[in-house]
Image 1: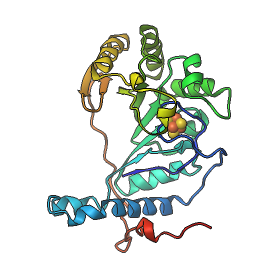
Image 2: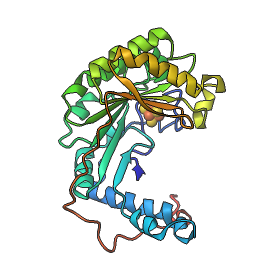
Image 3: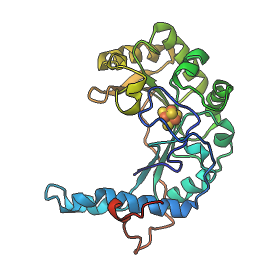
Image 4: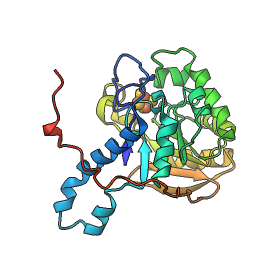
Amino acid sequence: MQMSPVVDQCNLACTYCWREPHMDTLELTDQDPLDLLYESVRAQRRLLSGFGGNPKVPREKWLDAQNPKHVAISLNGEPTLYTRLSEYMDLCHKHGMTTMLVTNGTLPKVIEKLDTLPTQLYVSVDAPNKQVFDEVCRPKYNHGAWEQFEKTIDLLPSLDTRIVCRHTLMKGINMSDEHIAQFAALDNRADPDFIENKGYVFVGHSRENLSMENMPSHDDIMDFSNKIAPLTDRKVLSDSRPSRVALVGRNITPIPIPEPTMFFPEDLGIAPSVKHLPIAS
Ligand code: SF4
């Protein structure tokens, strides 16, 4: 299941983001975490509902998918703006779900204070230095955002969870040999379990800022990965040509699956179809 606790708010305006522009205000959200979890599952069931009538979909798998086992807290907005993120992840774990939290890393105090960490923490490391950060990530409210981001980088080795540094790579913008060396220096400070090198895709609103030429080929991604691996004392573990992505690390370790102590209510139901949602006046 993929969801976002902060649907339309972000403190950055990354050029490569397909979801920008977000709202032009920044507010903390504090929705009840159990309600949020159950609403997310209901909405996921709505998304999958059409597959229930598809003869090509095995019934058992479709039934299994009604109670998701994994949640990606990602999709849109910056999730660390949700004040009850820790409680939310704790409830996911209590329901036997693994959690993957994706953050832009500019709110280190929030990450530092999480009582419950995700089973996997993804930090977007899309700029190798402050100049590229200001040009690519375009902080909207905080001129010290790069310094805050660096605090997150230095916090990561102390966090007891699986950590990924993700580099979204844009040809002609953040892929030079100098950038690779600077990215490697950040990765060495963060000491993540994995470095994910992923090619920018020319979709959504990002097309206003970038061009097709900024999309690296898979060979470009592999070239970047083969150069950064020795600089970080790691190796290329895996890659996917259709997704233009490569994984760099020391070895692939399984993620621990939380033991459930809570269960979705029998009558949890399904979210109403979008066409039946009330329209705000
Ligand atoms: S941090 Fe993520 S959601 Fe925010 S603008 Fe950048 S890519 Fe988009």
